[in-house]
Length: 309
Ligand code: ATP
Image (cartoon, rainbow, N blue to C red; front, top):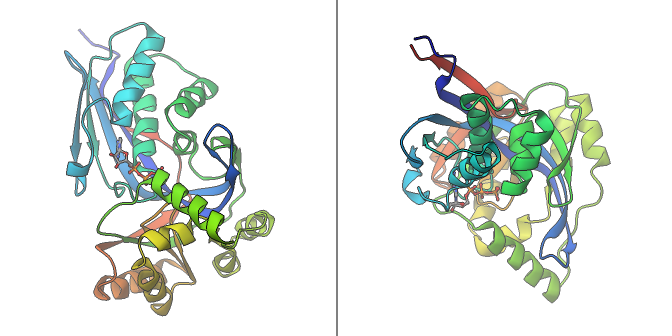
């Protein structure tokens, strides 16, 4: 009998770079007030869900061994959350193909969580609207709503309240992936420590950066990129200073630590420049590996429907 249930469902979700990450003071609830301009990049994870007898998670790709395959994985939590909403058991096999570095400051886990929400909405034919998906996403983590949204957006609160930002043109990036990862809470704690000891520089508003995005000019955008977490990431991983220097020496317009790091993101003038910068960085011995990416790209979206007969 022809079934309309599309199993498996494959969803692709983008990584992100924070073009501007302003970190306010610690709130009473333990979170920091953030002002973040996110851009979704083509470096992405694919998440495949299919019907199964019980919930399981497997992870493939370079960093797969660093990712838990039990309830600690955000995709597991996403499946349980949606199953509870749907009043059913979360009996699905979830397979993640990682392209996004693990604990790299590029929201890899959030991407997978967003992908799982979109995939299960399709697999279980829940017909959730955008607002409902965003609500589930926000419950799973601060960056998950952006992984759903994609493109370029301004995030406030813990980063989860999003407004679209006009961005003209495609921007070209080189990503320098580091050997280890950095834990996001550790980097925030290090920033609190640096702020208690002294006065590391703080970013101003993001208005000029948003004008530059609307103009679509990479050279105008480059000097406006900024990340309040960068001093903390550099304090924990001092070797990243060399990586940042090597990228600009290789011809990038600017380099920043991506989110909580340790991935460094380099904005380049165009696609050709990105390939040249990537090649030089790869040979400079300042990172584990190099990836070329572009943005903005869409948020988590179904890429293949296989129809079961
Ligand atoms: P962010 O930029 O959102 O702060 P990140 O990109 O630095 O996050 P992630 O790759 O999301 O970091 O992973 C952080 C930790 O979360 C990992 O060390 C891992 O133990 C755990 N984790 C849970 N689910 C996943 C997942 N699906 N993919 C990767 N890591 C996951």
